[in-house]
Image (cartoon, rainbow, N blue to C red; front, side):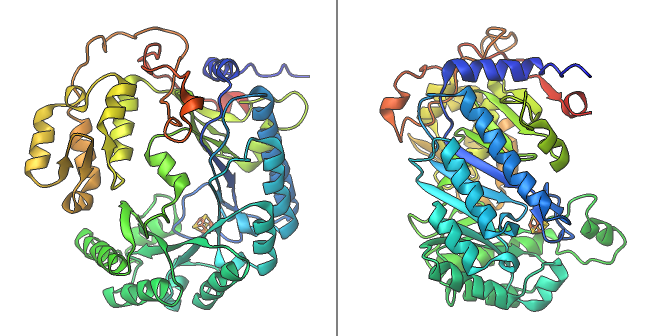
Length: 467
Ligand code: SF4
């Protein structure tokens, strides 16, 4: 019999840190990696499933992983505020499997104080029975991958659903009692015109009554069939200028219907924003369960192994403990933490909170990055600064990535940055829950970087731990 693999030192460090601090993160993401068929543009960690037994096996493996984290943090403080079940297509699961997954998570993890519980759905897989099972299990928001309401565009995308199914899905969502839902729409689909995009948007906000829309520009990902077709000259893609014009059309059309852009690709009526996704952009902590799911917790970024079979094997009952499915891990250094705060914060309309940046990361923004760059961006009308925040302007949103890169590239050496502050354990994380739960956050350290090492270490553990 082979010796059990010893966990990577960083995984050991993560587990030790969590077992001593015993504080749950704010968000829970659950990844169901299966779809009915693989869309030709998609490079997500998703797989067409062939054997229905795989679905049962995956639900049980995810619950097993949940149990392992629960055992590690037994009696831990706090609890999850948001749940997001994504994929893949979680709604490929049958009603009983959906119920088992959501109820099973509730039985194992501190989910009693949830402020939002979302599931992603493909219109080709939704039924009223599934939606009712989800409602009963405590899901209160559905995110539907509509993508387009033009039959030829859906066909070109290789989607399994029709425009009629998308429309019926929204009717079923309402009938099952969901008050909150999101509709995904895709921009710059080959062959899409301003007219066809406008038509789709108008139906989403008019006929379907969408109060939250996510609008993503179709991007070519290497090693997808779309990429190969484009390389052969068989797939006409919109150029950057056309894409920008289409995004402007989305912004103005949705604003006209009362949906404001609160993130680069997300639009909502006031109060309808996705609480879970806002947590990512606000740099708050989360745990991911399922193959390839990412986590950000206690100063570490880590992810489970991506392949479903390797994941199921890694969390198998008997011997496996929390962290056994980790396939990638890194500990963030101060500079990474600062850059992430900028990159994520500038994506949202509320911007980067200057006071929180200085309090948690130890330096004001203008000390951490060259003040001349801030001045130039402001003079160019790309950012707006006041005493509290730094935000992108409408113009800045058009070139959000370039603005973020300009700022992060202007990083200034910080006193002591050349040397690790202290080798060893990370001792803190931002007090991400202070706003929501001041009492629970009271014993968090004020300065978060008194003990974080500056040398981030990255390890791909897939080969070592899962041969
Ligand atoms: S349904 Fe979504 S996750 Fe599945 S293959 Fe299509 S785009 Fe990817």
